[in-house]
Length: 491
Length: 122
Image (tube, rainbow over all chains, first blue to last red; front, side):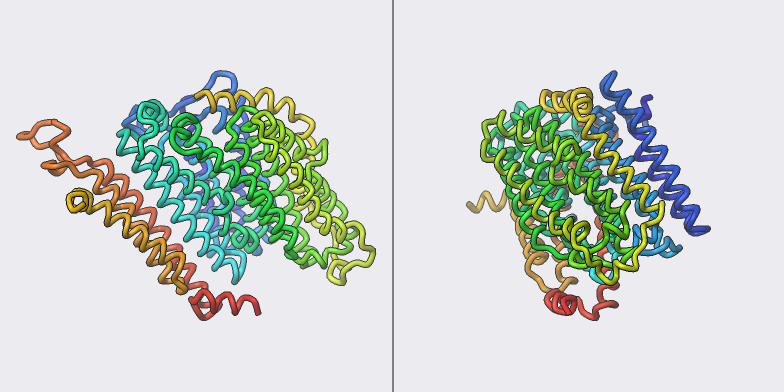
């Protein structure tokens, strides 16, 4: 059991290399490796979550060197929870047919599955590592895989990928500077060790600067408004499966890193010693909710609408992190998994529509409801969840966030969450009208047929999952998220 | 003032390089110049770490029998190690960035940001 924390990142890295080599022999071999690896990771992560919820964390010392000298990997309830989400979405992305998902069949020159597994390696690494510098390395590992995958989306995607590279690398630089400040004041890079040495020097300019630098850096990586500028291009030009991976889990992992570093390493008292950093995160989150929703209303390209909607949904998560109360944090974590399901489902639907009907513009979606009834059933459930209609999952995370805001006496925040649901209704209503109401089908849609099982399976699994998550939300919050939130906030 | 500059000149250099790099990334129109700005920005971070490892009268961190195992007598080797890793990471990032630039130039025939925006709209 001691090796459990390193098993996921190391296993995924091995699988990535096997997939790259297997892909040279036969593309189908790479896909087989990816399927086995992600399915195994899902099983391991689920077992690990049950295990750590029972007996606390598991620590692995890399190479047998004990911390604070060695690097350690930590599997605690928070990282195990995130690992389950990463592995499950990763499995569905690999299940999704490559031609619809990546815009092309995997060929020898483009090892899509190896890159996908490398991306997952980085995400698992960020989730498990107990070392501040190691976190930087894994942030860059997943970012490197992302640049390659985004660039698969055609001529505009290469530029979007390059812009993302500029922003992400600057974010990485800021993070490294912040870690430098922590290291030179505390003399340690180990998270647990730093958490003990930081409180006595809380409020010193170096520690405040470190907290600010790390917040900005991870704000860029998670696309928290106003540092989201790279996201709409990168997510709308990336191929559908890649966009699903990025929106569903990649930006969430950066949000996790923010929770991990600010709330467990620094601790809330140290973060708030000199500057109201948490309040700033909350209000930028709220501003992002409004900005993303308003921008989404103005989009005509479906994937671009989804990308701006991601900016808004990340705002909810930032808002919950910033409030830093058990209720709000549980709401933010519930929104991490809910939004992962909703947005992955919607990008899978977008990929199915592009493959079967060849349309990207919402104005040409007329008639899809009749031509592709099952795909659009998935779309409808995900949309209802995005708006927050009970009993779909989306309602409950917003409910906890509203409760968290009211508990903190932030009436304005609660109002923002409720009003933004109307804005979400606004931007999805246009799509909904085209899909289900307008009787005259678009010429391209009139010839379209229902998507195959490869596309339908992930879409419907996620749609059913949204209903299950909604109905089981009390159990999830009581048994998983509440303990995690208490653990994170009380240290 | 002059004493402060003398004592902290490396940190002033780091701040200046960070500002130069960041400005280049945000302001320059040519994508290659943006990438060069990014390289300058990264280098500033590296210099910051290396400066942090310096100790007055410290020597190379290889245990010398004459000096013994007194930690204060040696430079701190850990920041060097971290930066070696960070350099490897940025080499990979720059490699990917250059590959993307080649691909952008092949499809669009230019690396000028405004020109690219104009060609993509049409």
